[in-house]
Every structure is written in C-alpha cells, then in structure tokens.
Length: 288
Image (tube, rainbow, N blue to C red; front, side, top):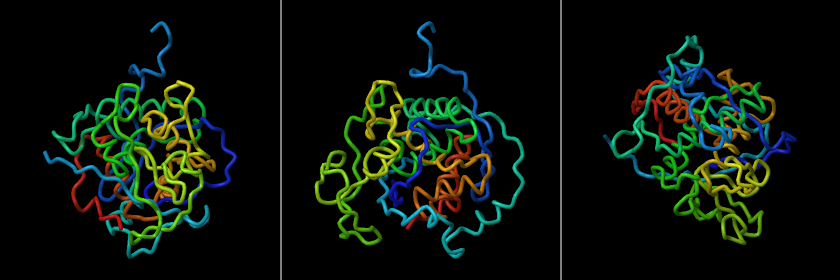
C-alpha cells in the first residue's frame, strides 16, 4: 500500500466489512449512503437470479506500529481539511451514476472497479456491520493507489491484464523505507526486497495477513480487483473501528499512508464518487 506500515497483529477474521459512512474531506461533505446497494453484483447474486489522469502507483512506506498511525504534524495537513473535520455531516443524496472511463472525466470509475468496490462493501456489511465503511472509501484508495488499476485494465472477473508492482524498496528512492523481502519473492518476484503489489498496493507481509477471496474462486490474489478491494476493506475495518465516525475513518486511512495529505485525497475522491462532483485542486494536496 502506498507508504503504509507492516501488518498489525490483529486477530480479525479473514472476511470482515462495510456499510455506508459520512466523511468530510477538505471543503466537501462525503456521502453517507450509496445508491445501487441492491443492484446485481456478479459474486453476490444467488444462483436463481476531461482531463485524463495519468496512472499512478504510490510508493509504500510502512508505519512502525499501530500506535504510530496518528495524524502527522499540523503543518502537513491541509487547513481546509482540518476545518472540515469539525463541520456537521448532513444527509447526502444517493450516489449518482458515474462516467466509466477516465478518458472522459477524472471522476469516472471503470465498471469492473465499481463492481469490485461494491462487492467488497456488501460482503463486509453482512459480516462486520459495525464497521460502517462505504464502497466509496475503498474506491478513493483505489483511485490514489493505482488510478483504478490504470483505468480498469482488467477482465470481468477482476484479473489484471498486467500485474501492478510498486518500486523496489531497497532505499534507492528518496522517501521510501528499506524493506527486506518477507515472502521469498512469491508475490512481487523479488527475493531480496519487497515491492507493493496489485491495484491496492499491498506490501506482501500485509497482504498475507489480510488476504481475501472477493470473487469466490478459492484464490486470494492481490492482483485481482475483487480480492484486493475486499482485503482493503478488511484492513480499514480492523481493530473494531467504526468508519461512520470521521475520526476513526481518518485513523483507518492513515494506516495505508501516514499522511494527512493522503487522507485528504482519499476522502476527496470518496466524496466525488458519492456526489458526482470532481474534487478541486486544493482538495487534492500533493502526497509526499
């Protein structure tokens, strides 16, 4: 995950979950509900039934421990975000229909990605309703980590056409921790140093802790959209967090990347997906 820490020692069950939440990123009110909850999702149905964004893969930097996942210095947090956290959170209209290609709009989410994010929410809602996270938060992380798998480059089952790998964490890039290999290169192909893997950019050690089978094929694969989206939800919900609360949502996202700028970006995109409004540049501070 983009600059996130190593996995915690939580004993949370493998399949955990997601409902809907209210979040407040910089200057925008995030949705507390998502439309289409009853729509057809391929892995949840019963047998009877313009500005083009450049692909981005965030470089990971794990946090030292669970207690370290706290907001960074106030100077790093956008002023608008800090003010918005104190704002009331009124009810929000249902999620609008979004464009499906980033070629058409930066607020777009490819169809297969939307299906994977909503599938994760439905599974988690059934298994851990106390978490209260919306699919739009998972989508916000997917947008920041890999621009929705480079604009939906995956088949209908969520299998990526090409694997997504972050930079080798050998200390050669400024701002990245050195992370020696933790999985013998099984997930990232590097037996010496770790690399973040998949559209949600999990470090191998973290994936092996939170791995999930989102599409029910019996395989947990970080390079599969459905599996990665469900594992992301499990990671965010871990520790008994209630993501209907903005402070706990912020804490959860900081696990992914210990940066308030990162939190602002994720929540801005989450708000955008809930409202159909493209975030402004000042709501998307640069992530260092």
